Image (cartoon, rainbow, N blue to C red; front, side):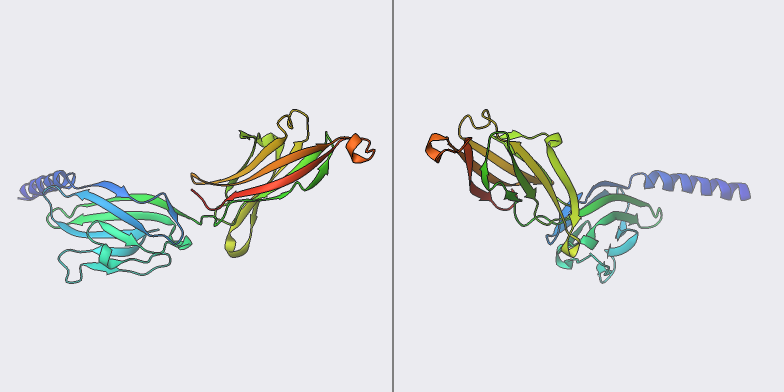
Amino acid sequence: MLNNVAALFVVFYMQSYAWSKSVRVTELKVPSTAIFGESVTLICSYDLGSEELYVVKWYKDDLEFYRYEPKDDNQSVYFPQPGIDIDLSKSGSNVVYLRNVALDSAGTYKCQVSTEAPTYSCVQAVKEMNVVILPMDGPSISGGEGSYDFGDNVTLNCTSAKSKPAAKLSWLVNGKPVDDNETVDHGVTVVSSNLEVTSKTLQLPVTESLLSKGKVAIKCEASFYGRVAMISRDITIIEIDAASSCGLSSALLLIIILITLWPGFR
């Protein structure tokens, strides 16, 4: 008798296991990077095979924040926690709509799908989401004013706008990127509201080849998760020779800085 019961249990277990393998999460859509203040849609697509849905649960950092139970009178339930602001009217069996993404919204998101008896299958998928704060403006450039001799260095400093994390800065001279070895990176500084800025200095030697066209276009680009904001300075250099400058012993270079700004990120 016991052997028969054991055999039936094994058959039932194996059959349940076979059924449960038909249940799977086919896709979990959680953005790897979300923008502070914007909204995101989390999507958990699943295939139940021949089984019936019991409940879908969503977790952030292993804390449940949303549940969808089709047979419950109140199908959608929201469990408040920091960084989670759900629009229930736009959420359902496989969708969660997060409003006003905050820094606390970053974390590990898990979708867990469970089915009804007799199999009680449970499958899940996990993804990470980071939250970034975009800079409000392009980078700013300081320095470069005054007059210079050939052989002098024009020193310019580029500082990014506040963001989290800090933007990456790059210098360009006449459209060509300047090697990082030729600049001084001052690293990241934490400022108000835990935001970050970075700065990078360029020392540009004044040479005849540099001034062959009488004008030097200098740009500082700030890149941030694939978006670029650029501030450009067209530096016009006027050479004043000794004869026209009342006996100056050497040629002077007057640097006039014209600023053209492309604000924001594109």
